[in-house]
Length: 111
Length: 111
Image (cartoon, rainbow over all chains, first blue to last red; front, side, top):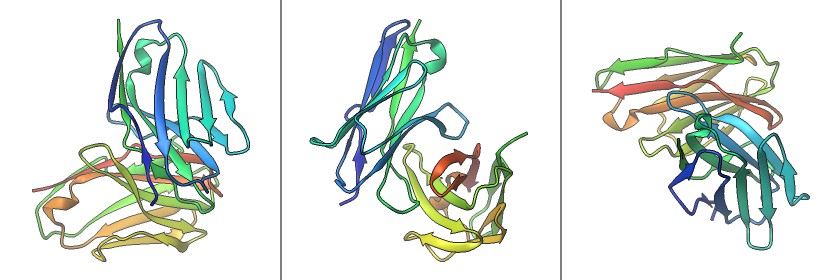
């Protein structure tokens, strides 16, 4: 069935270290993936996206990796800062305009 | 200048009441959505409208009725509110899936 899952519900990282948030998806027909960041009391905010014809995409301090063989997506955040503390969601799309979201990972940056 | 704005931000009401949440986007997007986020942060799509036409209608009780007077507005009306309707409701918009932007949410509490 359709599902997007995350391996870890919480993650604590020392400030300045790199963090990796993982996501597994089950629909092999998914062709577009997005990572969102949600801070307390706010709506999800777009971080980075990737299409299924790519396996890596980089932004400012963030990198998304896509492994279609094992249906796995990851978000790497370099040199984490206190402002990176939030809940992170991956979302997938498979040909319509609906995004299916994962359950979210709470990232806490330890000063 | 807020891109996707929803009102009210907080809504506390009694069981059995009828309430509406309004959403407006100034991004020129052609598609608007309503998502529900439960207490465990899980985000699930409820409805989607493209140029005022309903295109996605997930399994949502028919007490929930979206209305799109024009492509910049998508309102959500809820009849006979129940305790289980308590959640955060997010409006979003996109241009054919790209540029998916969320509002800041409406926290609905049914007592």
